[in-house]
Image (tube, rainbow, N blue to C red; front, side, top):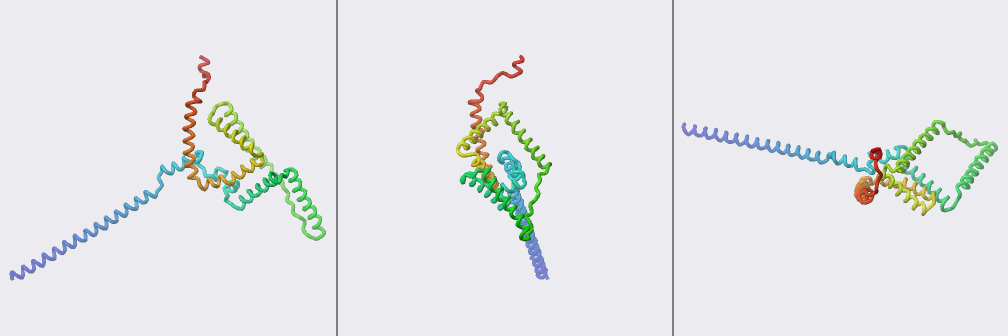
Length: 268
């Protein structure tokens, strides 16, 4: 009887030990799963943190644009059809405009046609074709050419004149400010620009200079838009170097130029 009781007690102890071991194993598995889940969440948070653009980098990319602009290149050119032509949004139209300008430059510069002579020849040809077509249509029973009636609206002409007047007045005011000695930087920039223009003008005539400017407008903006970040970074470094050189020039030259007394001192 005592042996039977010892056997039951041993069996109970074994079952209890197995239950405790199974519970410990289950708790370890749950803790491992929880730890793994927490690690995955941390990895996702770190990835989101790295993928999200930092405010400082976005602000830097916004502030370090060329000439401090905040608009896109397309908006700088007005955002309309002229901007689409300059930036080659429609390659057929842009190529046609550039090709037409090139053809005119070849006619007037290389072939040495005179502008008035060429215009007169073209008008003679157009009028002759339309006149013969209008008279021949009665004989061959064909419809005459449809010549559109072209009129310039008064409102459009007034708006163009008003916009041109505003731009001319703004340019005159800016030239007056530069000539009055209020802004040394603008004065030096205008003098340097006029000097470069005079050098380029001595190499070629006005028509070639105009054609070169036209080609630059059709090539430089689209290339700049394509490599905008690289150009802005290089321009920022160049601007910093120019500021350093200007500071040295101001310290050694400009600051040593004698200046007259102030108005307040004259009254005293």
